[in-house]
Image 1 (cartoon, rainbow, N blue to C red):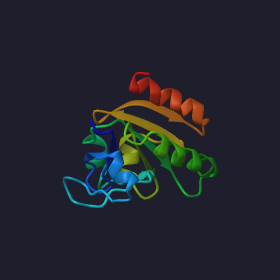
Image 2: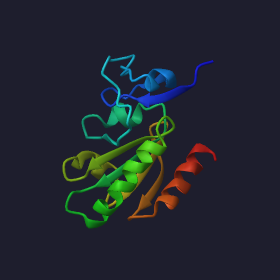
Image 3: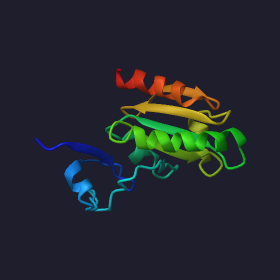
Length: 149
């Protein structure tokens, strides 16, 4: 059986099973649903008011969203940690970023009053929340709790 990596589509949110051998050979995989090329170097997905339903509520994998703003110092401090998490958790968790200034509907819906705030969703529902710039180990502890290990 071929080793597979799960790669979420940045366009439609579909989770794609991609043979690792295909990635090693340098071929660029495309989404099985919308045919958009898939990002093989995982980066946080940009989540907006417009794509929240597809990216989060419709996601097959758990979703970790960094709620941030460009003027927020602690948010800038946390940004590289979120990028590392996107790489480390690829195929198990979708990692996304939402600029709260540009997406007031969703940030209001989840009553974001302090940033950075990390929201963890499973099955389209918020299951955990981390407020403030926390160390990577603490964020991973919360995510592992959702993943069951």
